[in-house]
Length: 134
Image 1 (cartoon, rainbow, N blue to C red):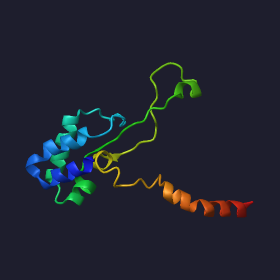
Image 2 (image 1 turned 90 degrees about the vertical axis):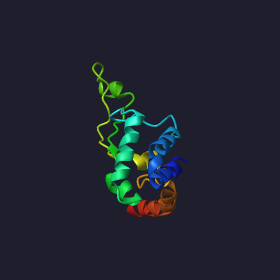
Image 3 (image 1 turned 45 degrees about the horizontal axis):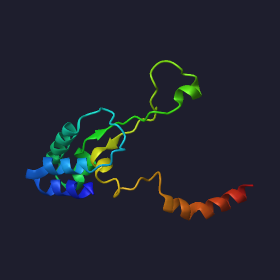
Image 4 (image 1 turned 135 degrees about the vertical axis):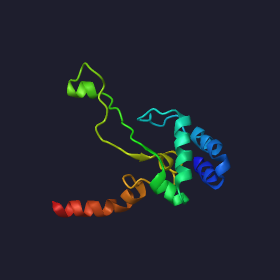
């Protein structure tokens, strides 16, 4: 789990680059491409610098952590919009992601957009409201 290496990097400043590199390497191969396509070494240097600037672990995650802005590509975009030639358009939705949260603490910080347990718990109430509307 990459979170343990990131926490260990916070606790042992002398070993931060090595521990953050271990955390970075343990990521799955299917992560989306970075918007700025920075090599892992530059991202690790940015993480080390941001850790040094933080006053606490919470401060690092919330204030000083570096971020990136990934862009998603749309498959089949040219067929659907008759955009046959030219470069493949990318998704128009701008995202700004906190690198440590996305890379190391994704399992800990649950997305508020997709929460299946909550959706399943609310389903009976949604059906009741929908039936009352008819």
